[in-house]
Amino acid sequence: MKRYGGAGRDEGDREGLGEMKEMCDPASSLEYHNLTESDVEEVVAFMAQHFYPREPVSTGLHMTYEDNKEWIHGSVREWVRSGVSVVARDPAKGQIAGTILATILTRNQSNTYECALTSPKTKVRTLHTVLSVLEEAVDFFARYEEVDRILELAMITVSEESSGRGIGRKLVQESEARGRALGCQLATAQATAVPSQRLLLRLGYEVLYTLDYGTFQIAGDRVFDMDCMLGTPSAKVMARHIDRK
Ligand SMILES: CC(C)(COP(=O)(O)OP(=O)(O)OC[C@H]1O[C@@H](n2cnc3c(N)ncnc32)[C@H](O)[C@@H]1OP(=O)(O)O)[C@@H](O)C(=O)NCCC(=O)NCCS
Image 1: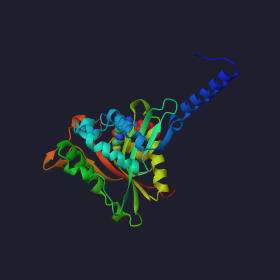
Image 2: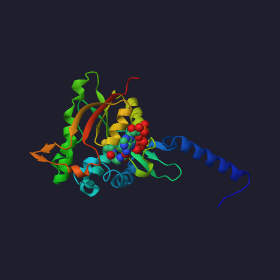
Image 3: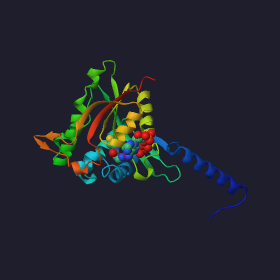
Image 4: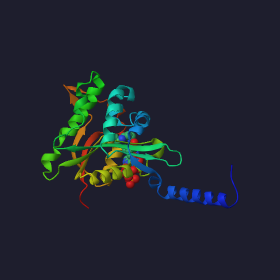
């Protein structure tokens, strides 16, 4: 119910200012906080709804959240511990608008996806073979001798209704800032979709490797259903120095 009088006007004014801020820069009107243990179930449910049905490797392998269920819970918990994963929330509704799940790679721990290569589920093994190929395509520690800590941006998701407003870009920047504070010199990503590739290119990332979905094979078999790649022809391994201006 609309309230009148001094207090009501103040609230109205604040609301008005909030609305104006949101119109000018919707990404800045959200709260960005570190992913915590208490976010895990909500983040997994968010990804079930907004990541798996809209990310080309998943759709091209006909891979749903259900297929990935066991792996994703454990992995999100790992990404909590990294200190570089971020959740964007609408402060008014408390709802998640987007997440970026990331980790820090070191010379002693330089891969993330090998653990699921032995999964009993064929689809999970196929997915993680693709991700491992991408992760191993560029030996960053050999390529950049001065680098000993790498921020690996693993999964970025913005809900469909919040997309195209700069939230994905802001999530990357928030994770980069945390990575920089934790001593990372480089940020890398296996960008599997055109929107994330464009987003990273616009932030100054360069493409170091391209995996063509149409010709990619495992044991002589093509694995992607090219009718379900959502307009993305290839995955790209991308990187940017984050310790330099
Ligand atoms: C990828 C994703 C996170 C982008 O989030 P977003 O909040 O919509 O992105 P932003 O609004 O910050 O856009 C930043 C830049 O990305 C690019 N971009 C975003 N959406 C795009 C789209 N649908 N098509 C082409 N480029 C797109 C644009 O270059 C944009 O910059 P510009 O507007 O200055 O040109 C979102 O589309 C998503 O969650 N997709 C489903 C899951 C997925 O595929 N994740 C990536 C797997 S690696």
